[in-house]
Length: 606
Ligand code: MV4
Image (tube, rainbow, N blue to C red):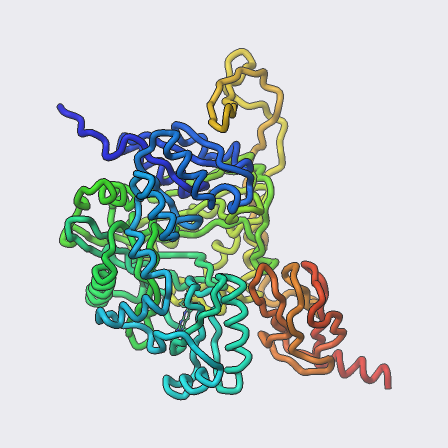
């Protein structure tokens, strides 16, 4: 028997966390040596230990480590790696970095720099797609010049319209404009946000599609002229443009529509000269129209659900393609089997506006069993650092149909034990039980609702008290432990034997608290800031009658404008903050009291 030469001798993964661990798994299977890079904050991170060798590339903040091209390329050259896989985020969609990698004589495991570049500008991408006959959301392909133009385009396409940042993506900086009266302020706000967030205030207009589904198509393209699609993923369940649950196939897509959007996606990939794995993001309207939104020129977080239903390893295909080989399947070989869900288990607090909940993971146990996959980069003792994305793990299930897969996910969520940080486990447990989710709805509005937040809280009771029980293993009271040693910025594993002295935390079975039936008793009147930031504008005055969901004020934090809305119907009182002032997390910005209470208080004074 002969053993094929590996595709590459060694590959460096320019990333951290679950995606680095995920990519190392495939590289191992392919017999390829693995190289990690890490920041000072990630010295003891799992991805570092899952690689054959690892290189320190700088301090914790990403702009001093994971984003520093020279350090990443230097580590690759030092290690003798032949190729770099960027994962997602960080440098994955940086065309100039992709070029720099190739210029250094290394192979970029991703699309050509020209394709990343072409898709980077959303207006240029729309223009290119339009010319290739790919249906785009009706709207402009040129930059907007004035607020008057917004009003005019609204009349042309019909209200409402969406203003988006040309340099944006993933919905960041999208403004919905419902009438000409809102055009002026939306135009100014979109420009400010574009500049603050992307360093580019170029904006354009699309017709606003009401309550659409977010349906994206996975494509693969190789150097041999093969361009195929692997069906779609439905990512309609989002909160503030953050995807929370993804699934494949989409509950709204049957075989005919799949073929239609698959052709759109492969046409788009061909038009841009694509190679590697990529994703065409689109909107599916109520009327069944599919429109191109943008192309993600990287492997995505949710690639896993496509892997589950097709049985393919997308990272393996990327490595094959980058090595110049044909992809392993033809379009005719691809079959979508069964149903898959992915829940993102983030260290976030649904009771506090989904703000990150960084900290030490004191207890951690992943679910297993039939049809369950967990992609994670943490273990008990890991720190969720405020420096990086707060994802703990991706929980993925597969089963024969949507309903059995949903039940499997609920079972797996129940087995998952995370102690020390707040997580979205309870949120997912609550949402997956919701009738709208069972029906395959988009759940718009539900994910933001106060009731769901309460249910999530009730279902996230996870207590894992440290119990006095010595760890089992280890002969004669000795336990072997691996310690990492860093020499000249290079990391080595050293085995150390030590007496068992510490305790392991025993997981106590979580008890579900009774769900509260409806609104919380004695609903509070206070409206608090969900974040630390600066008050940009107060939109109401004391004495104003407001309805649930109405915008009360806008707080700027991390260069994003965040609307704070009324949590109930009532009368605004005690506004404690003016535009321009700093606000803290939890600070009361005003009260919304019931109309009866407001009237009673007036009576008291009278
Ligand atoms: C839209 C839209 C309506 N009309 N564009 C873009 C990226 C994604 N994260 C959200 N995006 C949207 N773009 C136009 N012209 C509505 C959304 C949208 C959305 C779409 C599908 C499913 C859930 C959504 C949640 C918020 C916004």
